[in-house]
Length: 168
Image (cartoon, rainbow, N blue to C red; front, side, top):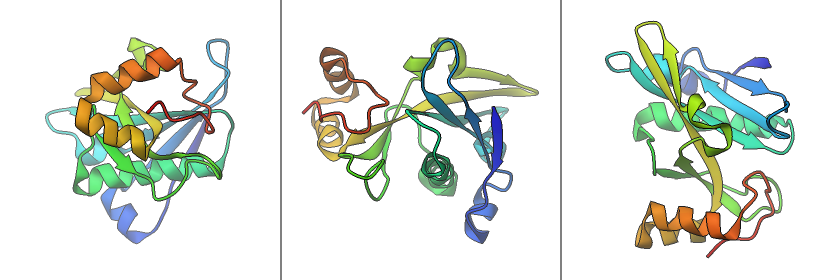
């Protein structure tokens, strides 16, 4: 695991002062890289409880570190992401990908033990940032989060595949 300090400028520094992204190599349980924010909880915790975010990707790339820093800033700058929320990322997840939004979901790929991280004086809930398409976000708005997740399950998507087809 590598700890990467993130400094995306003065405004972001004020919003998430001690932001880091943990970059976790593939291991025996996964062939993917994990990128985990560390700093949202400290910036936003209430009564010892707050959020952090994890993204799973096929390779190690600075773009994913930057995207997690952007997610942390978006969350802490007043948007307060939570389960079943989404956010646009301003372009494709990777060049050529149709995925241009993040869907906030349970960390299914990592198992339920990752979701709750005990901390001194409280805990962080770690939620998954799943890259999705604008069409999938629109479907979720009409039909609901559970309906979209059923489509993902039925299509057996590979969530780390940046070139996967939209399920809608």
